[in-house]
Length: 238
Ligand SMILES: Nc1ncnc2c1ncn2[C@@H]1O[C@H](COP(=O)(O)OP(=O)(O)O)[C@@H](O)[C@H]1O
Ligand SMILES: [Mg+2]
Figure 1 (cartoon, rainbow, N blue to C red):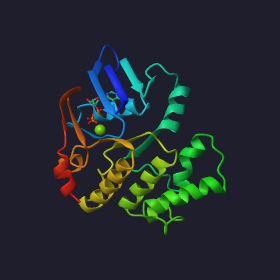
Figure 2: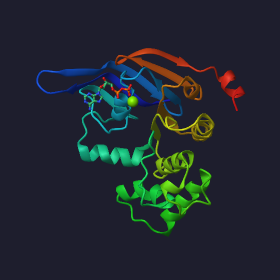
Figure 3: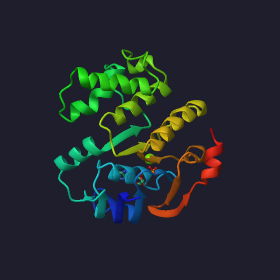
Figure 4: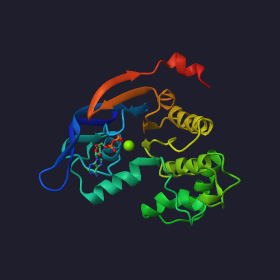
């Protein structure tokens, strides 16, 4: 499988006031294969979200290279990065990040709107289909506050798929959910992965990381371990 993501000697520093520099990612080298399902783990403050933000083109590396497919995105302009985000990437956040005044279907449509695509019957049909796929076919006109946490995260998953992304990035996607609902969400992510989507997900929970195929642990901005989950064990789960 070709690498969908490759980072080379990646450094990320935050510059605070005065001469204070926070060194967060320290010469990271990682390569993720197309079609893989990766859990990024590590203690709080180890740099998981920082790495995910760089991978999601929401933030830039201080030094080093980031190849998304064949393309070096590390030196792209803001406009180019936002183009990459809206055409190649799907995002799922811990806090769902839905707009409260919009319905389920309208929330799923949002990335298309940001992409400058004109909304019409055809795009609406696609969003309704995605809502159905995540089990919300009977909640199309509900607003986020009329949904449970698990349902809101399912809307976010449908939204992350609307641009047919190559890569889905999740930052603690089950962080606000109880364990039963977390299992539902992980089953959904596993299904997407089996259908061919590459997924990179941050989690600090072992139970959640067990759903991934590969587990990369960060510690203090460096890779501490990089292992593959036993697929036989995984097959016995669900
Ligand atoms: N915008 C920022 N400015 C300065 N320091 C930051 C910023 N974002 C994160 N950090 C620091 O970088 C380190 C890693 O943070 P983060 O990537 O959020 O870790 P994790 O997601 O693993 O908990 C922490 O020490 C944090 O305080
Ligand atoms: Mg974090």
